[in-house]
Amino acid sequence: MSVPSRTLSIGGDLLAGRVALVTGGASGIGLGMATAMARHGAAVVLACRRTETGEPAAEALRTDGHDATCVRCDVTRSDDVHAAVTATLERHGRLDCLVHNAVAGQTAGPLQHASDDGWRMLLASSLRASFDCARAAHGALREADGSLVLLTSAAGMEGSAAMPLYGAVKAAQRGLAKGLADEWGPDGIRVNCVAPVARTPALAGAIDADPSLGTRLEARTPLGRIGDPVDDIGPIAVFLASDLSRHVTGQTVSVDGGGFRGL
Amino acid sequence: MTVTRLVGSGPFVDALTAGLRALGHDVAVGDVGSLADPPGPVDLVVHVPAVPDGPCDLVGMTPDAWAAAAEAPLDEALAVARAAHPLLAGRRTGGGAVPQGPGRLAWIVPTTTLGGAAGFVATGAACEGIRALAKGAAKQWGADGVVTTVVAVAPEAFFSGNDGFSGSDGFSGNDGPRSEGSLSGPALGRTGDPEADLAPLLDLLADPRAAFTTGGTLVADGGTWMAP
Image (cartoon, one colour):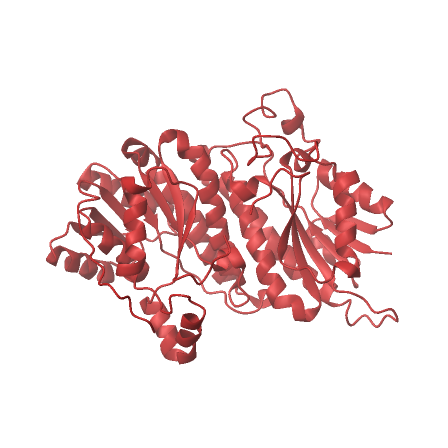
């Protein structure tokens, strides 16, 4: 694994006074994005299905001097999504960026035998939840000239033999984002996707189970390493939440060390 | 004779059917349940997803409307793929004397999905999902003798004949689905006719000589969408 030659210095006031809500914010990429945004001055709300993991994550951010809270939110429940946005607005009075990162549902394996329950969960947690997040946040994002960010995957762009249904829902989220960017442009809302590969707890577990996976992932990555959720993926969230990206919408940013270069 | 099963309905499907029959295809049209009737090897399965033919802003959509517009077409595409696999893969083991190419599974979507369009967020979501499904299926089923293609056609063609598109209610104007991504018209001067332009393309894709292309999206809109 190669190591960046320069130490990344994250911090500043790019997002001072801004508020970000991140689904699946208790760990992994969601927490990495929230952490990076908090370091740039944003107040962050971690929307988590399990507060027993979300609360400690928020507490850790507060210990580091950031404004962070946790709200319980099962993104497959529309009421939860709307309540999370409402709670954010009640606490902070505004919402500048909503990152929908949470996903659930396992459908690996042959298409013919993929679990219907897994497919339904993928649809609910990715596509329907994107719809709910967008509807719930539209008014607040319009007020703030805000940003909606959906997490997608290279699997949604190049297809996946191992997880074809995961690829399908991730592509569907890209389709949603592209259309919504056009639809919400007049409202001043930007809509973009991020396609990351990062060393999340889930990926670390998979690599533990199959050490060759990490080697294979690094081998297909020009930069030679798997990204860090905070230092590698987080800055893209900062960028998309900030005015630095004020003229960027309808795009997918691959943050994977160059592993996917097909766009 | 090419044995073709078409899943879908409406004027666009009717025109495709007429075109394919004129080219000698044995065509059966129906819903996904019709794929197994009659049973037996099939050369070409085409799914035309049922997407709304009028615009709707996302915020104004009810969850049920979203489910019907975005999730149902994607769900149906998966059902079509699953039902089509044994029919298309079966060609390889059909025992015929003449060597056969792979069976092809094709989806037809409007190019609206490629760039995204206001009012068609749900359609874009469904069809982009279908494009990735086609790629995943191609990767999984290549060894089974099943190849896939998505044909992206001009919205003017996809929605041709539908009341909403050609009517005088403003839908065909700036608010309607249109060949986005270009400030000029199609390079070939027209957006395509399902019977005369698109059915022959499907016929070509069903030919064993097209067997080496799979998983891709073929844009057939007269040269409007050229990216990437």
